[in-house]
Image 1: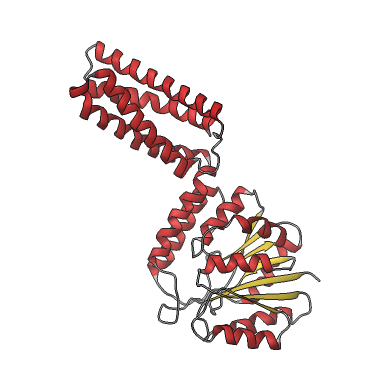
Image 2: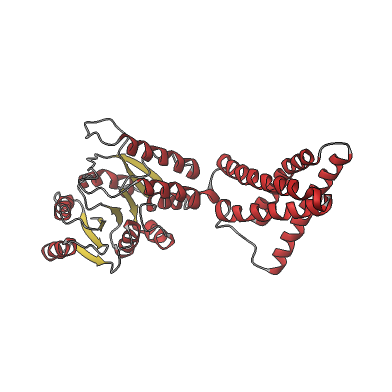
Length: 358
């Protein structure tokens, strides 16, 4: 029989932990599946750790890990992933929002060799459900849409807790994970896309709890998730999104270029103004590219490569100056001439950075 390892990140869940574990243990009732439960206590300040230890004494399937400092759900999951020994590794929150029996459905595509990762979607089918928090639901769907645009995956529920992996896949990805809180969801999805994993979805049931009942995620986590979608997915995004991001970067750089030129053209003259404005804009463009677009793909590490880069930048400046000076020479206003040269330079700059720098 195959073994499924479920990682339970736990922080102050004394009210629900025992009930959650008892429900998870029913996965082995039909004798078709071996079970390993890894509870990772994230420095709880209530009786969660004591309860976990009592459960482990009664059930040999349970393994306990402990953080000495509270780090967040993502950090707890990283710890659990590396401790898991099962054929398949999944996530189970310590609350009672999800039904562990759904893992019997999620495991099938993996067991049949069709998938590397299976997501449990709360939105795949209409059914009787508890109605809560319109804006929370819409934020989940918006984040899923943004994640899909960057990863080119057609997932319906990126923020779901229920994700089941083959152990080889998750233990390959786990060392790359950095997010300590709920940014884990978009981060792991971006890495799954980058690894070209075969992804399946399966409908699951969901019984959400209220914030009064202990729900911990908030609007700040939504903002962080949106940042993580950009941060971990931009460099690997499909071409349409790639171009939109670069257009955004190019537009900012063009504004910096034109504004700097307009401010100093009168006092310093055409050539110094063009040089200074171009250098400032090039630095802005490069930093934004490093931060967002090509973060993980920077090739320049040797002096010769940096030399080629600076030669390329100088050539682009020469092009920028020639167009600006030529237009001014035929009677076009200085700022308009600079704007036209910036627009033409945008295309050349994109091609240069994409195919030669990154």
